[in-house]
Length: 263
Image (cartoon, rainbow, N blue to C red; front, side, top):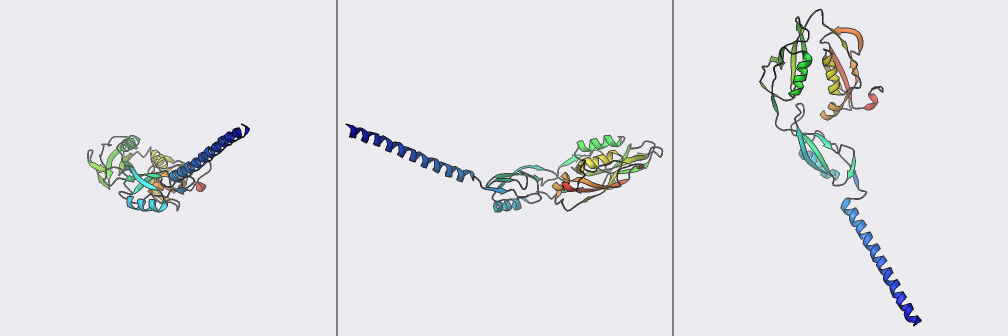
């Protein structure tokens, strides 16, 4: 009787051990299969696809172990048609091999809008109207008039443009505005540390012109130029009044070490 009990107990122990071993094997198989499927611990840096064509981006994606999908398009006047404007995730991030990177490309076809009638508007009102139509304020051309900053003419490529004319979105519109000799001075603002669009707006809002924009070596493409910030300006900010329309040169960078610490 005692020996039969020992045999019974041994049989149970053996089956338990076999079950535990089988379970352990299944766990290991599942773990390695999951690691293979999800590329566990296999990450790659996301390449910078900016300014590439979609074909070039796909070739680079294969070489780098990721995939790309065209997710959206925008229209950027100064950028090559069909070129990659932005991406998500951004360049340099580490992702699992085989990750899909979403690309926003510059539209192949130019978007056109109708030119608004800005004559009689104040300069600030005209600028707001231009932005709402997808157009940009170019130069402020001051001429003698009794109403300072009152729009007298609207110009495109040095020629007067009529309201209602079709024009490529993103175009620069120059404004001929009045300048009263008794109200013709302004001050140069401090735009250091501001990003491109904010800096340009600040210059225009002070009745000044952007004379030149100089990018340093850290700015490599159009996307960089949009997110660049001012690290120097000329003339510098001053409490001394200057004539309206004075040009201000902006020096831009994406290198945070060059920017003023206070901004």
